[in-house]
Amino acid sequence: MPSARTCVRNLGRLPRDPFHDGRAVLVSREAVTDVAPVERDGFQQPVVLIDHSGGPADLTESVSSFEKREAGVVVAAPVHRPA
Figure (spheres, rainbow, N blue to C red):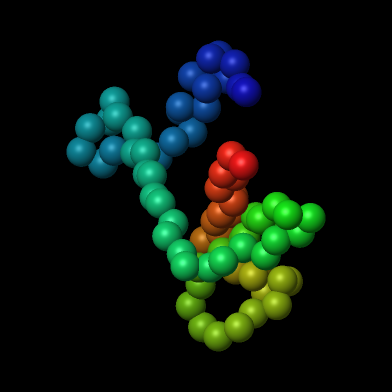
């Protein structure tokens, strides 16, 4: 976990609110999917969701689109339910 000093130092890198210079823009999104994660050894595996325009893309194209800020990536961690 980053230290409080690191967090404060990184605040200056956040985009500024165009209507108030003393504020930073924070974005929070929640991904919802009906994908059923694959199970391996009795545990559901994480799923990587790639939000992009266009048709199917291979890994190289997907990473390139993300680096150019043309695509979003979400890792959906499985929900572990107690036995």
